[in-house]
Image 1 (cartoon, rainbow over the protein chains, first blue to last red):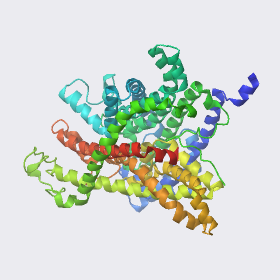
Image 2 (image 1 turned 120 degrees about the vertical axis):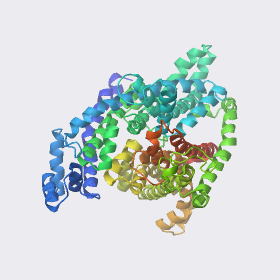
Image 3 (image 1 turned 60 degrees about the vertical axis):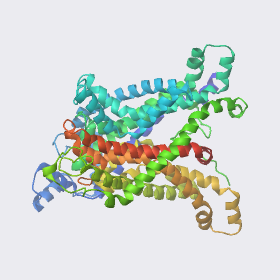
Image 4 (image 1 turned 90 degrees about the horizontal axis):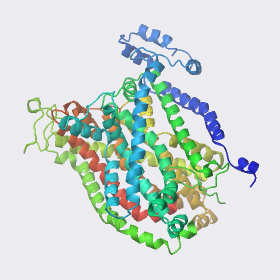
Amino acid sequence: MSESNASRRFESLWQIALRRLALMPLLLLAVSLIIFLLLHLGRGDPALDYLRLSGISPTDQAVAAARHQLGLDLPLWQQYAHWLLQALQLDFGTSFISGRPVLTVMLEHLPATLALVAVALVVTVVASLVLGLWAGLHPGRWPDQLVRLVAFLGVSMPNFWIGFLLVLVFSIWLDWLPPMGYGGPLHFVMPALAISVMTISINARMLRMSMVETASQRHVHYARLRGLSRRRVVLAHQLPGALLPLLTASGMAIGELIGGAFVIENIFAWPGVGRLAVDAIQNRDFPVLQCFTLLMTLVYVLANLGVDLVHAWLDPRVRRRRPQSGETKGRAGLPAGEERP
Amino acid sequence: MTEWASSPAMPATRRRLRPELRLAQRWGVPVGGLLVVLLIAVTLFAPWIVPFDPDQVDVANRLAPMTAQHWLGTDELGRDVLSRLLIGARVSLGTVAAILALVFAIGVTLGSLAGLAGGRIDQLVMRTADLFLTFPTFVMAMCLIGVLGTGMTSMILAIALTHWAWYARVVRILVISQRSRDYVLAATLCGASRWATFRRHMLPGISVQVLILLTLDLGHMMLHVAALSFLGLGVAPPTPEWGVMISDARDLIWARPALVIWPGLAIFLSVAAFNLLSDGLRDRLDPALKEAHG
């Protein structure tokens, strides 16, 4: 196969990244439009929410003034165009609750959430590697049974309850860890553990399964027949194939971890986006809600892109221009479905 | 790889895998099934078996320890914890049942539409489903509640709207694979209309398979309900929902940790029951389910 032929059949990582990034503005535009329409056509009047949160009594005069001030008396498309123009200049309006610029507030809270999710992701990958390998190398024996039991308990416990149990044991009874707050590395232990129990359980199960599956593949049999040591067979021949599903699963874990972080932040008084969002949802703080939704879309799409790039880098098959049918990615690896007459 | 998988080398590995599979099969379905039946019984009969009115405030008797009268003690307003837990089962299972019905309706409708119509409609429905599958369900549910407003109805809608896409995809594939089955072709040849063929010959089989798949997801949905209610975005107090009870008791964790432990244990046991049952069923039905969707 000649060089040019190969480059025609495979995309470079740059091409993949550019193609995906080019779609992003479109996605953000679609999400912003949907959220805007739902917020403005849905129940409730933003002007009333604004007055309530600002502590102004809602007289007819005040409502009319607020509607004018917020631009709610304009036609809907003009409102959206106005909002979009402002948003393009990174001005998402001011929060009804705090009266401060929304983006500033968001960016103040984002680092704490991202730090928590990043730590939890590392914990997830390391712990599921250890547990999954341990179980996958002893299928049916007691390590396997133990990991399966732990994983089963892990997927059945609500993460906020795990958070409280951890506080109870490590802060109240043992007095080892700070019960809440944000600061030193010790503050990360319980929140990160509470949100990663679920993803560790899912990923460990998955790695165990793919280890057992690869164990019966031809190249692994051949490696064993060649008389390679067990360690070498596992590390060089079995693990690489088993790691790819784990990578995909870790990508999906990011979403799970972000969701978990939003819940857990409320227990540990963590100064992240989650508490901000919950406050905004309860009080219907429209500008914050719009910015929050877009920010989450951005974070999640970027995180997914990162995972996909690593995947493409490790597995050239992903870079093929026309993926063969049956290789579509999805929660259950559903095939594309053959169209028959 | 497929030829290798069916070669005689496989049975050896299979046999080594068997014991644990048998363990899950032997205990998973009976134990999980028993717990689920118990949960459903509590849900149905809760109003008649509760020892106290779950909303009855008794300030003189607040934060009572476990006694013969109040088996699990009382909460910060003197309400009987056991009664609230039992009624809470009703709230949890009720909301999950509503979500299940909604997801079933949306998934089967849109999935069949895409599978039967094909072409542009198919493309539209499936791209929309892809969009929904891209985002993490919990964060998306939070955003939707932000739009719809807090409350039980909004929460049910939000969770259903974030879970339909995968089922629509499964239904579409089932519909497409059934279109070329002999009995469907026979019905068409006999002159049955497309709608009649679909309703009589395709829908019943698809419904059963989708219902089974949906029950596998019940535990996951229960966790969503509990977490959203805990955050104050779902079921509102004073309704005795388990997540709400934990939220109510959070400041008492130093003084009365039991008030946090009991509702959490109730959530955990219910979710575990559904997961146990579904894991066991999945192992048993695996060949059938695999054939259906991958």
